[in-house]
Image: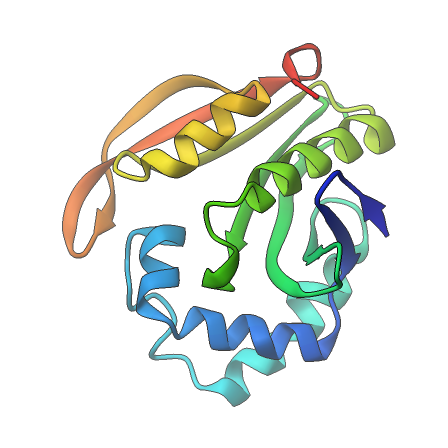
Length: 180
């Protein structure tokens, strides 16, 4: 378990993965997570749950990982992950989704990202982390800037938001940039 100020990050279980599937069926959650409300609606629960073994269990090697986000009262509220880890270059890409809407806008996502970044820098001696979001997700961008991420570029019309081509904002964080 990895502890932050407001959250703890714990390895994913099959039960958590099932809750994660339910969150992915919520149009509003998926809109803010990906820009596309219907991202997972065509995937059956059975097919999604079969992915647990490959997406979660096999990824526990080192190049990727998925952790549950828990509050101080042990409420499971979201997931945070890392992927594309390159230990030679010292880099990785992270992503986050707060699926429990009761916990939006209360600092849990910011603390989860900060906690994950600190863990990755310390545990794997990484020097740089990257993430991205769509340009209209101002709440996420503001949260990432608070941690020390910097906007490094815009990929023009790289993602669809409700079917409309939209810019993708790419952000990076060096170990020395992390704001505690």
